[in-house]
Length: 574
Picture (cartoon, rainbow, N blue to C red):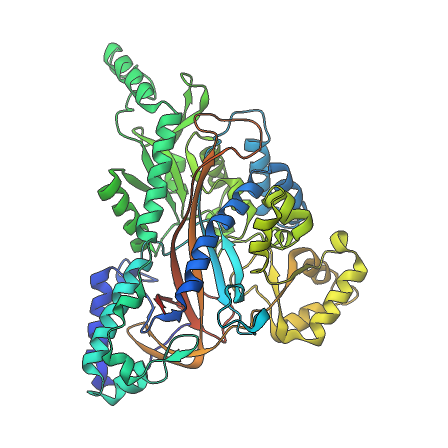
């Protein structure tokens, strides 16, 4: 399903101004079949939530960061936890686990510093919270934890600017057109609990709009990683050494690192035919203008031809990644490599392995990638998410190293999840879970190890899949039990709202839901070392780094902003 607008011809002028504002702010993406840009889908009203709840979620993000980092650094645990998934998904998960073993459990030195740019996604559960409190932070339930290519850190801040413009626009135009009143203001929510009224339009709420700090905080984390890498690798000394060597050596014989004159760069590894370029360039521009750090953008296909690993004989560190013979890579920021489609041939996997073996700080490293959920288009690792719900055996001892208090702070945000693998919980338990789901299918969803493209199962499709027997279809029977988990469905509130999409306004009458994503950044490792142990070292940075909101039709399970199903949103704090 995509958002297709219905727009009366006489109201085109109203929409033209909104579209112009999107382009002026850079709220754009590339078209599906051309280089031309178009506006990104965006709501026409912000989501309204209590300020204290947003503050609590922001403060909680450092615990999510710590949880992922601690879990990821327990390399043996990650490998063993994903053993079954790696076998059933040998072409993707299996190769990533193999990479984990080669780089982090092998004999060669590896880059111990790891940078995480994570996003913890929540939806508000409308069921009453315990104690009948007026506000209850625990009603915000975790949907997933994204550890790779977390989109919209660059564009989310300007959505607030767009909503500020819309609110000023509507205050002046309200009453001038019945279409404006019926399609943009009437019955629309700021979020759960309150509709926009005429009084709202005549009152200035712009001071309550919360601008996301992600456009500054994420580049700050990337810059901190570049600084840590430069110190760790003794880069200034290494560069000076090769510069002197180049001057004393006849031209053409000075070796592969003779052009090591440029400053360290951040390498954005992007997809072929990337559409979400504005979001990425917003981050790279901030890196350049505020921190004086150059970013370069390459696909795996390009890196296969232009990247080389240079032995780091002076420092004994892992090999230096050099792009185009002149750009030393300090940080690899993956905005791709999260889906099988990113690896059409073995050459792409070899290039990905070379990046992991290099001295560059990876964002994310393979351990961070494997430790939790990735993006919607990615084959995520729901098995890890399900295991982390096991408070006593995993969350406390592994993720928080015995700290029960920290573990319980996160536990209240989990929805219950259940394995369907009889090797893990026993055949009797699996049948008990399936029977419970079949009795109340509206309360559950089937989450796959590989999600995206409609793979999430709910309703009649879920029921049909769970009713498959060994005799009827052995392959499907085994697939459901090995590759899917059962998750309780969040009872989220449904609102009325309007979305600017595909050149027009789409009205969602009591059919819009919203998801809040909290960004977090963590830079960890032993400063100046590349330890072979898998224990976590010094945490150099651990911070809340902004937010994003995505709103979509409530009757659609799968689909993101780039796919044309959801729209960017912002927060109004009350």
